Image 1 (cartoon, rainbow, N blue to C red):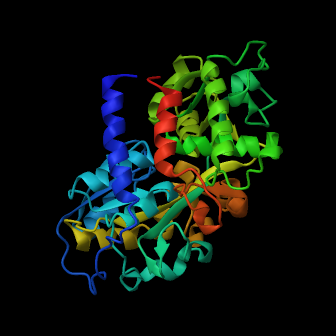
Image 2 (image 1 turned 120 degrees about the horizontal axis):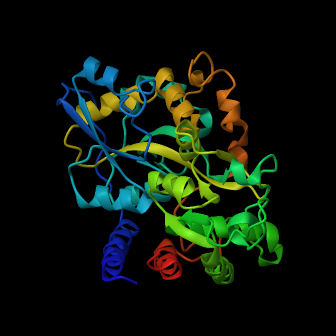
Length: 392
C-alpha cells in the first residue's frame, strides 16, 4: 500500500470518527426567511448532477437559475461519499452537497449540515411522499436537506461481448467464468472503489449463501462481514481496476478491455452517447442504490442563494432533465409526464416501481440500526475495504 493511500486513509478515518460521534453537534434552528442573494452558491455533487450545458447543450439546469437569481453556481465533483464528507468537514467554503444515504447521517451527527426550513422551499409539498421523512436525512422530525434523485446501482456490460444475452447475475463480476465471447472474465471486470461496496458483496451472499442469514447488507455481524470480505478478496483476481471516477471507468470500457462492472446509470447513458457499446441490468439478486439529498453546510457562506437552489432543484423541468441524463428517478413526480427529454415512459424505465426492492446506501452502525445484536461499524468497513483493495 502506498504512503499516499495510507495518509489518505488516516485522514478519512479521523473524519469518520468525528462524524460518527455520539455527541449531538447539530446547529440551532434554521433561518426564518430568505434574504438577498449573495451572488454565488457552491455545490459538491456527483458527476452529472449539476449540468450547465457544457457537456451537452440539451442538458442545462444552471444557466436559467443563474440568470433568474443572480447566484453564480460553482461545482466540486466528488467521486465517493467519503470524499463528500471529507470536503464538507474540512472546509466552510461549500454551501450544499448532494449526499447519498451512506454520508447524510454522518454529516448530521457531526454537525456539518444544518436543519432546513421546508417552509422556505415552496415545492416541498411536491416531493414524493415516500421520501419526505426518509430516515437518511430526517432526525427527530427535523429535515436536514431536500431530496434530489434516487436510483439503483446497475450491472453495466459491453453489448458487443454479451450480444443478445445480457448477464442476469452479479456472478459475472464476483466469480470467474467464461463470457459469451469465449474468453474468461479475469482481468475484464471493474468494481467500485469505496467501503460501501462491501454491501454489494453482502447482497450477493444474501442470495447465494442464505445460511449466513444476511437480511440487511448494511447490518452485518462479524461472520457475515468476514464472508463478504472473503468474496471481495476472491474478486480481486478478476478486477482490472477499482473505479471511483465515472470517466475513468468509461475509458476502461472503451480502451482497456473491461466488459462488466457495477456502475451508475449515468455512465451507461453518457457512454452510449459517446459511442461505447453499453447496456445495463438490475440482476436477479437485486441491487444496492442511492437516494440523494441536497444538504446545506452548517456554516454555508451563501445561505440565501443556497435556499434559492434548494427550491430550484425541485422544479419539474430540472428533475426530468436530470433523470433523463443520469438514468435516475425524480423526487418530484410531476417530472414524470410532459418532459421532452425524459418522456412519459422515462420514470418507469429508470425504476420508479423498484423503490421497495432497492437496498439504499446507509452508514453501517454498531447497533445494527437499533434492531438488536452487534454489527460491524462503518469505520471498520473503511479500513477493511482498503486492506482488500490495496493500491489497485
